[in-house]
Amino acid sequence: MGFELSQRLKALPPYLFAELDRKKQEKIEQGVDVIDLGVGDPDLPTPQPVVEALAEAAKKPENHKYPSYVGMKAYREAVAKWYKRRFDIDLNPDTEVIALIGSKEGVAHFPLAFVDQGDVVLCPDPAYPVYKIGTIFAGGTPYFMPLKEENNFLPDLGSIPQEVVDKAKIIWINYPNNPTSADATEDFFKDLIKWAKKNNIIVASDNAYSEIYTGDKKPMSILQVDGAKDVAIEFHSLSKTYNMTGWRIGMAVGNEELVKGLGKVKTNVDSGQFNAIQEAAIVALNLPEEELDKLRSIYRQRREVMTKALRSLGLEPYESDVTFYVWTKVPEGYTSAQFVGRLIDEAGIVCTPGSGFGNAGEGYFRISLTVPTDRLLQAAERIENLKL
Image (cartoon, rainbow, N blue to C red):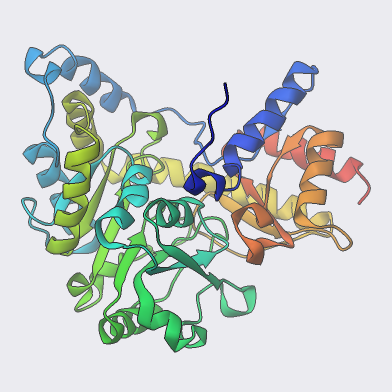
């Protein structure tokens, strides 16, 4: 007996990172020493005080019950205080902050709160696939905004047809950007907020990489722009900042109505995050800045090593000092998939094809700096041996 998948699932391409994992496992089973530069999963451990806090919190019987749908008040207060320290943004922890089971969960669920059948959601391209996937699950229609290097990988709002703008409910942005490693300017954020207000469009900002920077300039939160809270919600996560990808803990903050709408969806589809994890996350949010500086120093070294090696091979990485990704043009004569296929087949290196993030990503590939420096140097040597 066969069962047919729903049309919404049939409409989705294979999830990019699941396909990469399949190819990686194939090579490992063949005995290949695979260097995985594909998924952005930090190799560095979660800070020990956070691990110890979880161990203690897990022993408390009161934490063994159902948690709050919106998150512990203490956790929401810690998020609000962190936003105040980091961005000088005032947030009401009772109405403008909600806990997430990782930011991916919030990003995927958010369109369910505000998108009806036929509504348009403006999605960057290339981009994290979940903006598009969440839109399709909600019955919306994604409209893709090409991010081009000549425009510093910022969307051109003026190029979106007015008939599309009139149907749009949400615009997704992600700066610092995955996969391009670009960052947005304050002027862009100001223009975006002004445009969104004029067109009555929700701004959904994914700011998961705000703490992964290696230069002197700290990335912004869009909520720092005057009036942003009138139309914007921001999604953030402890995953990249504190090496807590497996812990599944994040937050959404901003406009009260938008936070409340997301909360209504979550009330119906999940039961909140384990309180012990939230208690540990509070410890993470209060770690001294020196802990993050150590992390940034490691990524700085890795970026310098990798970009220098790529340039010596005649490749062209995009200049950046944010995220832990290196976005690089493929050699002439290759598509993104062809080049990445050759890397895994002939060199045992897993990278991500730019085309996997959207049509506008064609011609690029993404390297994750989430392996030790010596493995990055090995990867560069293997690429050199391919004689491109």
